[in-house]
Image (spheres, rainbow, N blue to C red):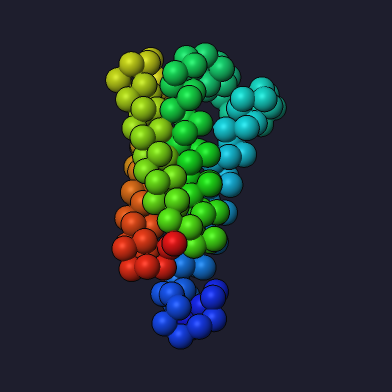
Length: 151
C-alpha cells in the first residue's frame, strides 16, 4: 500500500507503507526515552525501583553531558515526528540525536565513574540497541529523503 499526500500523478514521491510503520514504532520507542529523561530531570525516580546509586549518578550528571542527553532524546523524538510528517528535517534531527548520543556515551563510558549497576551485560546490550536503532533511523530517513519521500 502506498499513498500520496498531494494526490496528483507525478506530483511527488509516493509514501511507502513502511514509512508509517517505522515512523509510528520509532515515535513510541522515543517517547519512552522522553519519559525517562523527563522523570529523571523532574526528580521523580524515588520509589520507582531504580537503585539509589543510579539515581545519585543521574542527579549528578554535569550540565554539558545533560545537554548531550537532551539532544539525543529530543532530537530522536522530533525526528520521529518529522518522519511521520514526511519532512526532510527528520534526517537532520536524527543526526543531531546521534551527536547527543555520542556526547553522552563519551561521558558515561570514558569520563565518569559509572555505577556497578550500570556495568551489567543487560545495560550494555540496551546501550548498544539504542545505538543501532538511532543509526538505523538516521539511515532510513536519509534514504527516504534521497528517494524524494521526505520533502
